[in-house]
Length: 167
Length: 419
Image (cartoon, rainbow over all chains, first blue to last red):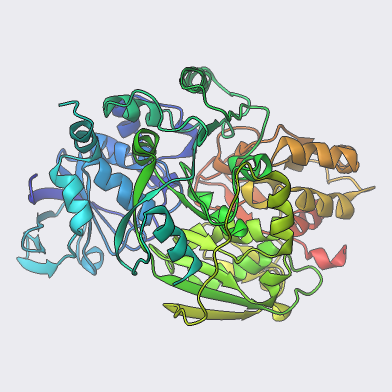
């Protein structure tokens, strides 16, 4: 797995819940690309269409609170996001993201220091986030052994296929 | 150890567990609701063939009950086929109700078990002394394949609720007051144990309402030590023998919050966050809040007691013109009980719209979604932007009594005036 990511960011606020990430009215949709096209439309309907491929979402506290809907990380991944950096994450969102290979990384205080369109480098090995424009480096938290084990396997699906002898 | 730790230890084949430890535990019952066809996709993508135990998992068709469009109908069809192919012992189709109400009614929830469902409000089952927690579709698919899931043993917060509730203060008011204090992320990754004299005397429905909203503080699970009301409820229904777990007297909580329930008032969570909690009086004294819709339903506030108090307040009156009141019984059993006692008939005469049991407009799927600029007061659990429809609608969370009194008056109103 790639532990260094550089990407353009969009910044959202505190308590961005799963209804804002992916509203209930779209839950019957199963096509991943279509799911991605509605990502974060509860915050701003123009975000998904303009999201930079390989970009990073920066959020305040409690990102992903609310429902257990896996549509939230599916939408973020298919919108083009590779990581979410936040002050804190809701638990089910964290698990869902790790399972699907989206990096949910806690980087306290980053949200207050950055704005839309800036470029960040996340280095999971070093445990740092660098704001490229200013060169400022902030510490980020480790994901934990269990999450890393799943991410290194490429997500929970390849891990389970291997366990059940399917590849 | 805490009762929750004992449940995790027992189901992972250990004699003890420690906070922060990762364990792989057996799941006693797994439930998939009808939003998560992805569960079946993930199951096959990972090489699944048959579910691990046809007695211990079920689908509940509650969010689209009955189906509002072709997509959700097609999703139900695929789920039904999967359930039939696997010969699942339990199946709850669109005629049953909300998963967190129908599972206890069917006896698949009992003390000392682990229940995992593709729904965040699975914390509800702490009301029965069970460990309930929500997960996503792919985690659920791993359970269907293996019968187990990894868990981090959580820190446990005690929320001690002491005293008797004054008139007009319902379990929903109590949990809103707790939420306003602990906030929306105050219990992330942690468990909440509700204790104290208020909990000890509380009946099953009130316990369910309080544990249900533990997840709105980020909690992984909730717990209440079963009382006689719980034991009576489960002993009539449980589909297998169970063992109640007890917390050791020397257990130390990570944090303790104490609330004197006797001093509480009717509460509101104001738009558009569950933690934006204020006393009803402080909101109404600042000016009238005019309403378009009242809503009584969901896994939080759609049980017999919730509909009963609405019928009591509203019987013989009529809601004002150009407003609407939507009543969604949480289950078929709830609907039948309310019909038998005449609540549904009374509410229809009051001008209420009564829908089929299910999740309805609580999550903006159908049956009462809101237009831009509209204001709704509801006995449900979330008031996030866009939760019940338009992101430009405003949602106030309140007790069923407050919803009833308010819609009767066309503006947010103190239920104590009518009780």
